[in-house]
Image 1 (cartoon, rainbow, N blue to C red):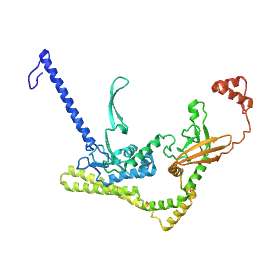
Image 2 (image 1 turned 30 degrees about the horizontal axis):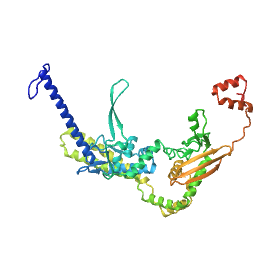
Image 3 (image 1 turned 90 degrees about the vertical axis):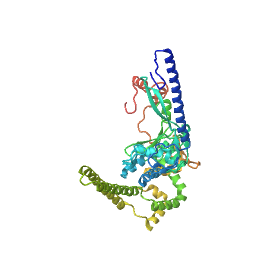
Image 4 (image 1 turned 120 degrees about the vertical axis):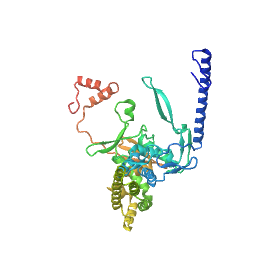
Amino acid sequence: IGDADGIYHPAMFNDRLVLGLKGTMSEAELHILRARLLGGIRNKAARGELRRGLPVGFVWGEEDGEVRFHPDAAVTSAIRTVFARFAELGSVRRVWLWLRSEGLTFPMQTHYGAAIQWIDPSYTAIYHVLTNPVYAGAYVYGKSRRQITLDATGRRKRQTRKLPRSEWSVFIPEHHTGFIDWATYEANRSRIAANTHPQPHHSGGAVREGSALLQGLASCGACGRRLRTHYTGRTASPGYHCSGKNIVDGRGIFCLSVGAVQIDDAVARAVLTALAPAGLEAALAAAERLEADRDDALAQCRLAAERARYEALRAERRYRAVDAENRLVARGLESEWEQRLRELEQAKAELARRERERPRALSAEDRRRLLALGADLQSVWEASTTTARDRKELLRTLLEEVIVAVFKAEHRARLTLRWRGGSLTDIDVDLPRQKPAIVRTDEDTIALVRRLAAHYPDTVIAGILNRQDRQTAYGH
């Protein structure tokens, strides 16, 4: 083995000793160099100046640590549309479905610095935009950690584990101007978490399409668990039940099971009564919003048409700049130009269609009717155009939780409404009485089943009844 200082024979003791010393010193030098490099990276990240990949919508500026919005207005407009729609719809999936239903595209980069590609929006892309702290103006470094584990076969496996915020290496809020502020980001994260994993005694779960208005709001008055919804009969009559007791003892007994019609009506009356003084003010705000609000989809289509026009002009310039006799190159550029022109025509046609379908501005008569509805919220609540989802959204803006306690012997339910402000309201609701059974099983058989149920499973009880030749009222 040779180096700049000489030649060494590994079989000789002195040469082997020198090789070992040099190897040890080289390893220590590499360790020191690596530590210095990592230390420099961490120090630069601690100042918010380490340039790493930015999500779509941001670019690095000229100054150290400077982060700017993407110069393409279409890119930033698409990102702002996502945040605006989430504030209105409250669900990642509903934002994604809205973008798909409007036929809008979404910007994507395979890596930072790559060209922007406009693709059909995906759920993952929308989720990453809403949950990335960079969009809230924060500089973050060290959100994940790589660790090596052993699988079942003993092989080494590298995994990346996401860390909680308390373990992030660097977190600098208000590092740059974001699309939203940090308080809005926190609220969005909490809302997304509540849609998937609701916390006890907090309204949770994304709003669904069912007619049960207290879905995600109702809690059991006996055990405190979230009530589940069910729909029975040909008319899909809604109801609520708590499976807490079934979970605990496994005997298939619910803490409560009650229809939703009377309970929902009582809660709706309480909410409408509380909103009555603010009805006119809400109607005025709605009128101003309808007149001032610009159609996000229309704005996106205008930017898409402008982008298609630019791409067509650029393709034309490239075609005209090439030597006409070089047909191999000219043919390809000509095909590209024709493709860009077709895309431009499609963008213009889509923009014209949306312009035709854009709702007209509110007239004086429309404003008068809207103000009249504001004075009568009951009509708006019962209108055929008001969906169950709209009613649920209204309830969630005012109520934090509705605790339901059922008293079967009294055919009564006690509702405790916990409002957003922290106040409580108790409401007593009369429940419908069950119709008396025309045919009943012998009382002695019922009493025997109840005594046996405390000690034996259903199969054993059925065997005892069969051996005693006992039958139900229907001959079973």
